Amino acid sequence: MVSDVRTTIQELKELVAAFARERDWDQFHSPKNLSMALAVEAAELMELFQWKTEQQSWQVTSDPDLSHRVSEELADITYFALNLCNRLNIDLASTFMAKLEQNAAKYPADRVRGKAAKYTDYP
Ligand SMILES: [Mg+2]
Image (cartoon, rainbow, N blue to C red; front, side):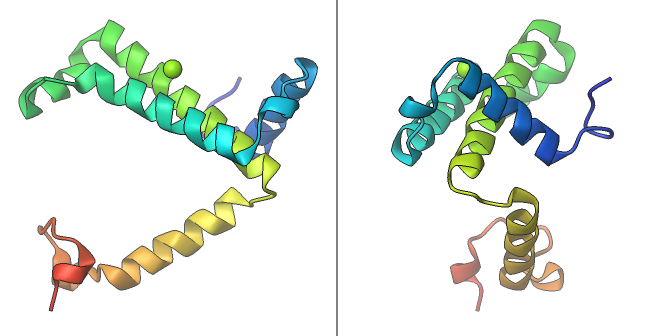
């Protein structure tokens, strides 16, 4: 059974590659098109929360239909992110960890705890 606990990023990347290959869609999957498709899917996710208050946006946890739609948009975003990684030979796990370390240096926990400002705004 597929789950976050049991499935690797590499396995998902291989499923994405096979899905596109079986449909002869790689010809359409330039970095430009994939980055745009990713942004469109991110906008579809945002649309689900558009005009809701902060409080209402939390109701996704108690609304099965909305929760399902949010999950599907996140899956669409992931599909295009992994597809772009495939096309550009990006190792997502190592890149993710490097970026997390960069952000940890930009936002030292003892300096930014409980604050939402951008790193350039800290003295
Ligand atoms: Mg979508």
